[in-house]
Length: 394
Image (cartoon, rainbow, N blue to C red):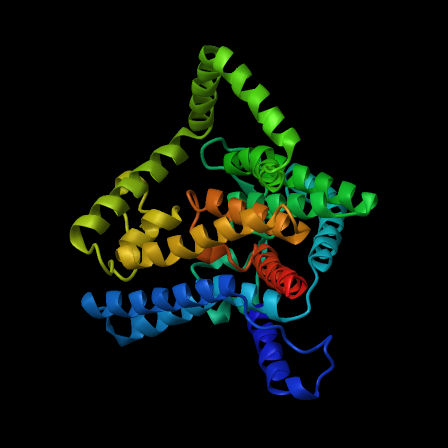
């Protein structure tokens, strides 16, 4: 709803642009945003072709089209409004700080809820009437019980715990780019708290590697970076046997931490890949399908964006997501050395890529939309920087 309200504001300002002041007149659409727009339109074409080819009927096609508008379309919509409206990256960082403070204030209630015997779910939002992938998206939870361990696990405002880990990493990225020390501390504290309580393995790994990777890319042209990389390479070569043993042990611990979850995810991915490539490789099956008992009846095409696309929308949908991701990765990597907004956007994109191997990212676009908006802001800042450089050269 926020995304489409911002789109409506953009359309109104575009219509009245000649009468508006320069501070309110929309910017032109950067090329990086056009890549996302074109790719998501291709995704819609794949949806129609998949439904038509599998004879799914008009009702399912309409339902899936609405789902596209609430999912895949947002991956282009938020970069569009971020690029064209006069939104500053610092506004996003501070808003995440406010949300982090709210989280810390509510944290004692969440932690004490299972100890006090309070109910897991409080209520289901009336917004469920607009439809969605399931009631868990609209249910307000205090906590939930992990089925494999029987221990309390917190998901905050997310529909499931790993998605809360995605939010935590977004808060961490914003906090690291925040100039004010108070809001930086608040953001880091909230991010660490959510990661610990949601108990998501992907969130823990992301917190350790995503922002440092974006930070390193933004400084890759500096002499100190080459010096540090050469020292690290030398040390890695000398300590390679030890590092490999540590890596093997870490991977084993990571997998065994929630063995049932790893087994189900692996089986779902294998089924989605094999059936997608063998049965409908071009346009896919059109919709997810219930899995067998072996995967606890989880839908085939869920829990993995890439295998899910191969199964549901075929290779056309797969490349419709791959192309804008690769383009954005290249463009933001180049811009990150000159623009702070591009460094934050690059970290958000890396976060999205990493979580795409365990989540259906289109379903969570409504949660990490600040990161998508930051991508649009970075594309706009890069376009303006290029224009200023071209103007100076002339």
